[in-house]
Length: 443
Image (cartoon, rainbow, N blue to C red; front, side, top):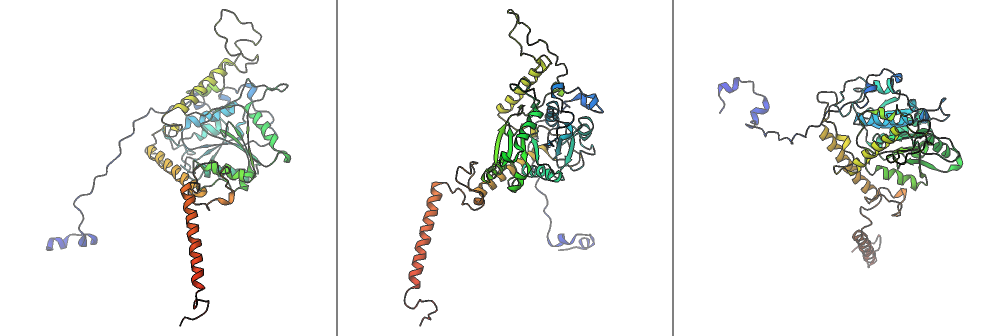
């Protein structure tokens, strides 16, 4: 029964007809993730630099050619998380001879202008120092308008190449530092840096008689040379398969169109999940020979150190770098937690623009990967990659019964066909009975 007091209260209309519950369930939270050590910048000298003149010199045998080669050699490196690994791979390519002005970091952090405006801190997984990249390392930075999946990012590389009229382009993984093979020599040929060997490979593919090339893979696809129009000819990467299995889908469709993908060598390219603490090691600023090639060895000395070229190439510092990268690569492949732990190594950024919970973001990406695997399986009717070996062709996409290779599925389809055939025959006999002729009225 309503009292006069109740009538005088400004009660919202919805409460007059539906009383609110006396209490709400308390939100239950997941355990807090274990805290991790703060990130430190792994190129202190660059942090204090104002221009490339403040950096160590690139090893003279790896310096880019001057003037630039006639061909355009753009190199895309996509970034989403982990500044230390990004900076490492950039420095590795610069010191392996790639012209800095040809390197394009694609900021795919999805934070719009936040990095450009310096609004994120080093502990934020999506942090990028634009000023250092453009003013000190002198590379170029492109910003995606929003967070792209791997397939979308690949299509972005192709789109930018079309916009610039580039017939070829390179792209590299940000967790794959590259080093020139300073001990590699072809008989009768002068030494070439990783960059110049990659240019040589590109030149081999340019004559029309080379054939319908789609890509050249260096150390699988840790570095890839792409013929732009080949990717366009197959419709690009399938954006409905966002991450894993999208490479299988793309490469199989290229092969179905009779394009070729050939292996090539240009240097040493590693697959790592960590970064060295000081990137000056890539410059090998103390790479003077400690022993000439023709210097006699003492029979009582320690085991011989790596033989050093007289000009400082393949120095002891160089071999220390290779040893470190070998250790990092081995650690990644032996990590029981998985190969890509580096992607979720940071937890900071709270209170900064576009903040995302690190663990939640990683979980969301993982769920999207699982979705992509299901899309691939639905598209081709199978979850495995060897589509052509299974007899599939380009036009088979989206037309196959799921799990069509399984014996029970094959049997079920044959049974269904036989049942339909019998039903069709029975229907035909029924229509031929007296009084069932077409157009004849029953009496």
